[in-house]
Each structure stands twice: as C-alpha cells, then as structure tokens.
Amino acid sequence: MGYRVVVAGATGNVGREMLNILAEREFPADEIACVASSRSQGLMVDYGDTGKQIKCQNIEHFDWNGWDMALFAIGSEGTAVYAPIAAAAGCVVIDNSSLYRMDPDVPLIVPEVNPEAIDGYKVRNIIANPNCSTAQMVVALKPLHDAAVIKRVVVSTYQSVSGAGKAGMDELFEQSRNIFVGDPAEPKKFTKQIAFNVIPHIDSFLDDGSTKEEWKMVVETKKILDKKIKVTATCVRVPVFVGHSEAINIEFENEISAEEAQTILREAPGIMLVDKREDGGYITPIECVGDFATYISRVREDPTVENGLNLWCVSDNLRKGAALNAVQIAELLGRRHLQKA
Image (tube, rainbow, N blue to C red):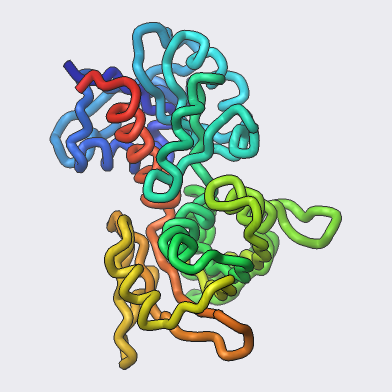
C-alpha cells in the first residue's frame, strides 16, 4: 500500500520538477493528483518519463481529505490560503514557499542535515522546505560543522534566473536575443538588464541594507544547522538559466585542513567532491543541471583567519534547492512517521 500524493502548482517550473523526481526516484505513490490555479485546470502534465500524464485540477475545489501528503509550489500567497485547509484535512503539507520557514511550530528540513527535526511536523501538519541557496549551503556545511564547529560563514551567491521562475528565464532568453539583433533589452522581471550582466539584488531591501534573500540565508542556516553560527551573505543574480553557485568562506573553532575537509566532504551524504587543482577540475552550473548532488570544488585554506577554509558550491536550484529536497522530505516523512509503503 503506497501513498496518495498531491502536487500543488504542478504546471510551474518547480511543480513539474517535483513530478519528474517523484517518478525518477520511484516514490511509492498509489495515486498522484496535480492541482493548480483555475488557469491551468484541464492541462495535462507529464509524470516524468513514465509516459503517464495527469490532468490538472482546480485547487480552489480540491478535496484534501484522504490524501497523505501534498508538495506545495504555489508561492506564499496561495500557500497561506490552501496549506491550512490541506493540513486540517489530515494531508501533511511540504511547502516550498517562504511562508512557514521561520514559524517555530513548523520544522525546516534538509534531510541530510537535520532529519530528526521532522518529528515536530504534527503541531501544524506542515513542513517547510528552505530557500534554494540555503539548502545547498547547509548540505556542504553540516559535515564540516560536525568535524570542527563552524563559527562564522561569509557567502556570496551567483544565482540563476530560474530562481525567479519562468518569467526570469524568459527575460534572460529574450534580452540575449534582442541584444544580438540590436533590439532594446528592457528589464521587466528584474530591476536591471540581466543578459550579459549581474545584479546584486534578490528580493526586497530591508532597513539594514541587506535584501530579504540574504536575510533568509542567515536565519534559515541558524534554524537548520546551529543558531550560534554567524552568517553574512551577498546574493547576486547572474545570467545563468539553471544552477546556483556559492563562494563560501568558513571560520571554525577547531583546526581543520583543506585535505581533511576534502576527505570529510567526499564521504558526506548528498555531496559530490570534484576538486582537481588543474584547468577544468571543478564544477560549474551548466554541469550540475538535472543532477541530485550538491557539488563542492576549490577547497582551500584561508590564511587570513585562524582555522579558515574557502570552497565553491554548485547545485541545480530546481532540484536540491526546491523539488528534490521536497521529495526527500516526503521520503523521510514516510520512513519515519507514515510508514505506509
């Protein structure tokens, strides 16, 4: 006997990726329902490469009773309306939006990092999926923190336009094409031209001059990994379609060498270490697309601080940063609590 699973927002980038990953990983689902807004009602969506298609239903009229879990990718506004309804009907919500991440009654989960925290889901019947840039970073930090205790993290992100949804990807494509043919490349989704440019601004600005995306990385890392870790972030949008990259500087309480860190990371769950000190001996975003792993390269000691390391971290933001992590949470929920399959 398997699970009855709902994918909410099934016609969007992340929702479609959730369906792909459920199929790829052969998630033990007896039934899959796809729901979205009324605009998508009746559309057929692929269940991965299985050849099966599922008709999209209107979320406004969906009956949540009898469903085991729902993977939400509908943004904070829609989640605020429908997540409590689903949860009240006994369907455990795994939410990809930012709405519940810092709610003390909602566990914020990266299965390789804090699987035990999922036990708190019963308070609200909701589990939160972290921000895409946070998810890949804490996968990299966790084994190093266990080994040498992290004091401080300085991270600069290089985030792809898919993090801004289909509109972001369309804008990069259209602006690039327009520039080549001599047409105007006016920004619509982004605040400045994204083609052949970088924009040090993701999400809204806060009073202290940081952006909300940067704030998310700080507070989510503390909630998931360790509240004592100091984190400072600069988040930058770059003209890459899929795949987030991060340059991470880490300061530890205890001594750790680059060689020790490489050995630890090589054995850590969810990580692929590709770190050859030669031309091309590292991973770039284009090479991580479609993969499950968080890739680590360029591990080296930072001589400017005591017990410091630098590393380069790359992952498919639509997968580990969103859909894959949600499916991994669903797998963890099944193994640890629901135990139907």
